[in-house]
Image (cartoon, rainbow, N blue to C red):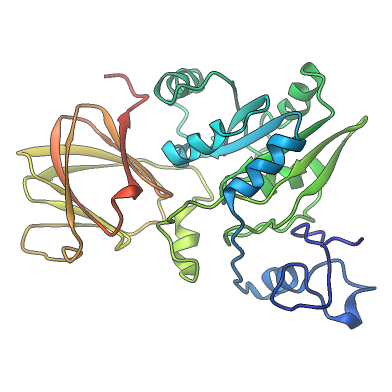
Length: 326
């Protein structure tokens, strides 16, 4: 049984619309399915959606241990609830820590995660791109006497980059395309230890449209994150990538955006009607709370204010206590 080395799908020649398809004449010579081949060589998009519950059920039944990756910009209620649905011993890994400003202390983030999201499990920090603390994966398995562990996470949490670092090659397909990995890939770690790279989770109602390749690319920073602070007078708004408008209804409001610096952000005023065709939702934000925009990051509000948020889906918004000191 041959599998695609890029996404893990079983190679098959019968149905071009199903995962793992490869032309018959290439089945003996190629190691990539047609989808991965086109993704790597032509940047050709083809989204494949796998149900979150199906993946969780497999891991809960067959797994002994799980590592769940999330980057700090994408910590939100839906992600944490998926993590908590794992009923086996597990560790939450905050990935891409090289993107985080150094003044944000890791220990403070860990304590905040445990308190704000009621997490009682172990929490680790790593950067696969910079090879920082990657060895903690195997160390944790050794300490817990676990030979096999599943690797899970939402789209673009850094799973494939981590796997390639652990394998010291780049055979796993990495891409901005959701669900690049479509099956379970066994990754040997040496001395009879191995990880199972699992298909990535997708949000129930993602803020992005998969065919908008530029937006997908902008959402995920590739370098150090530089927070940006705005002072908003009454009636002033920030429009982020034409997916959300945040309007200040108070006398004044200071906000700092922790989002990819590639995103287009426009500051406009009351007479500008851009994005007001969507319904507005009112939020009373306390000093030093975060407004989380699912998939994009979060906005730290420095002083109490009232915000009017125009958005297609209110489920993309979450308000939480910040890990910054009050």
